[in-house]
Length: 174
Image (cartoon, rainbow, N blue to C red):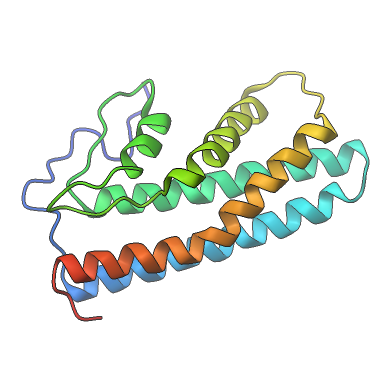
C-alpha cells in the first residue's frame, strides 16, 4: 500500500510559523504557481495542433498542472497541523481540507470558486493517468483548458492572500 505523503505524522505544536518558514513556503508556492502557468501555456499550445498527438500532449500538460496544484496543497498541509489519514481518498480529502480554514492554524487556501475546476481537473488526471485505452474528446479538452486557465490565473493571488492572512493571524513580519 502506498504511504501517504504526510499520513500518521504527528504535527503537535505545528501550525504556528516563523518568518523564515512562511517566506520559504511562499517562495515554494510561487514556484508551483509558475510551473502551473507554464503547464497551462503548453496545454493551450498543444491543443492548437488539432491532432491526436497534440490532444494527448495537451492532456499531459493538464495533468501536470493539476499535479502542480496538488503539490502546492501538500506543501500547505505539511506546513500546518493538517494530516489526512484516509489512504483511499486522500486526493479528494486534500482538496476538501484546503477549502476550509482551521481556526488558530491556517486560513482556507482554496476559494469556493475553484472547487469545481479543481475537481474536474483531478478527475481528468485520474482518467488520463490510469486509462488503458483513451480517446480524448477535443470538446472536453476545451472545458478543461478553461478550468486550467482559471486555476493558473488565480494561483498567484491565492498565494498572496493566503500568506498575508497567515502572517496577519500569526503576527509574522515578512
